[in-house]
Amino acid sequence: MTASSANLERFNALAASWDDSPLRAGIARGVASAIAAAAPLRTDMRALEYGCGTGLVSVLLADRLGHVVAADVAAQMLAVLEQKRRAAGLDHIETRCLDLTVDPLPAEGFDLIFSSMTLHHIDDVPRLLGRLCDLLLPGGWLALADRDREDGGFHGPDVPGVYHLGFERARLVDTLTGLGLAAVTARTAHTVEKPGPAGEPRRYPVFLISGQRPL
Image 1: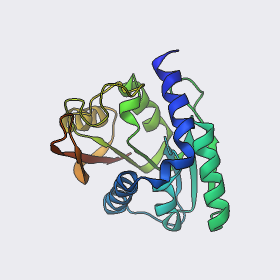
Image 2 (image 1 turned 90 degrees about the vertical axis):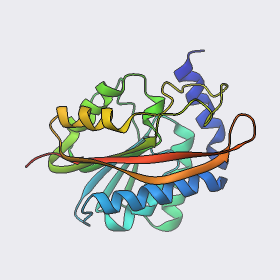
Image 3 (image 1 turned 180 degrees about the vertical axis):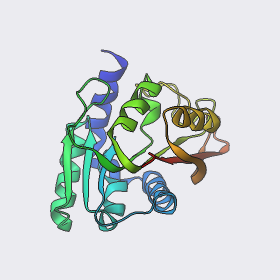
C-alpha cells in the first residue's frame, strides 16, 4: 500500500468520528475567522474548498458565500458532509470527489479557493498551488492554512501520507507571489496546544496565507 492510499484509507475510517475532536473544531474556527478577515467575502462568490474533509470550514463560511464546491478525495468524509449540509438546509454547498494532483481541472473558475490542513498531505505542493491559481477568476482570492515548520511531533511517526512537517511561511509567500498573486500575506490563524512526543506541552501555530489574482 502506498503512502497516499494508506492516507485515504485512514481518512475514510475516521470520517464518522472526525467532527468529535475539539482540536479539529478549534482549528476550523480559527481558519474560518482568518479567511473572513483576509478576503472580502460576498454572497455572490463561488468558492472551492480543496481537501474539505467533513466540511468544518465550509459550513462555518457558507452563510457568507454564494456557492461552495466542497472537494475531497475521501468519499466517507464527503458522505458525512452530505448528511450535515442536508440537515442544515445548506443547499448551496456541493460535495465533489476531486483529486487535483491527478484529475483534470474543473471547467469553472472560482472567486475564492481555500483549504485547511491539506497541504502537508500533498507531495508536490508547488504544482498544486499552480493549479489552484489557475482556477482563480480575476480578482479572486486564495487562502491556505497549514502548520508552521515543526519537528514531526504534531502527527507522530505512524500517520501515513504526511509529506511535509509544516512549512516556512516566507517560502510559500514567495511561491504564490511568483505565481502572480498580489497582496500575499501570512498571519497566524490558530495555535494548537497538545502534548509533544514525551508528553510535554507543545504549541503548534497554524498559519493562513492569502493572496488575490489581479483583475
